[in-house]
Length: 361
Ligand code: FE2
Image 1 (cartoon, protein in one colour):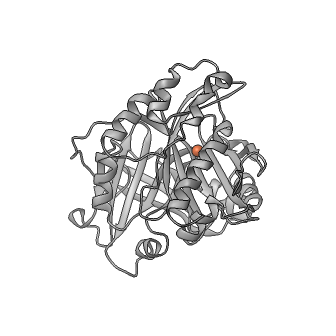
Image 2: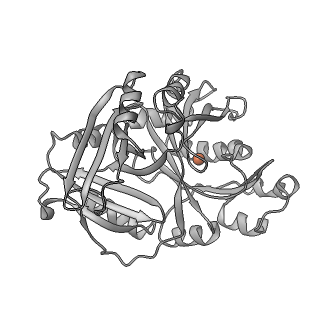
Image 3: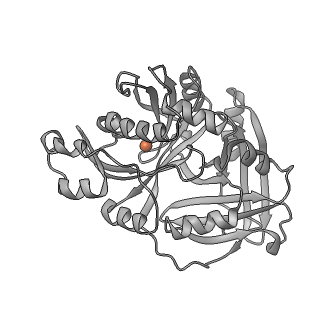
């Protein structure tokens, strides 16, 4: 592994959606993002409309296209709304791209430069699992708003809900494919191996999954799940069936005040996975002290996990679209660099209850 690739940061995530204008309103009104830049017909762009949504250090780009032939429309037809591009900030696009391609990555876009009066934006992209693209971006010589073609905007009056940065991005791949894709991210993209969970750690009576966590840098991670065989359909298989292939399953977003964030999100209509009351009954016995009383955690449905480094608080939304595919996790870390392994079981029972309601278990 080349050390110069170790310190990757998520630059942004780009979503391909059916209606970017309405999606922008959803992420603004429900999740408290601000629409800070736009490109579309009014700015001279004839094929695609894109909304840059920002909160804290998080950048989402929501894109739709105007014609049925465009790759964005094709993606929406196949996958529904999905995270199509994971963009990584890199110091040298050509170096990142060449290394990736020389180690087996399939090129999507060779190193490209786009300029306007604000400078030069450099980028390139390679394929990852499914139709997901990994984009390398160097914006060190660019001072404009996001990218050439975008114009600055500040149109919404919704309040931020306290989301700070992307903590982790999780993808689902088919049975037997997890190791191959982890190797790909380590060897071709320079990620570090962080931890893994096998199906013994993540199983319920009915279904199981396996998961590996790759390190982008000290505070951001990329996780990959695959289904494991159980008595009934794994939640990962449900995703794969409805997404029509591998893709991004959930995005973990950090907050410093999970209670206030969750209160705001609930008020604006975001739905969370209901956690069985039994979860909280013996919580105090094993989780020891947290900054919040167990009653408050129970009232909001917040989960707790503790490891040797500290603890974390987390909660999961229901899928944000019609298909049981993409959802969000809100996470507040107090030292722990884990992912809530102690919660996997109760979480998956909750997920399976939802899966059963959808007729997919
Ligand atoms: Fe997560």
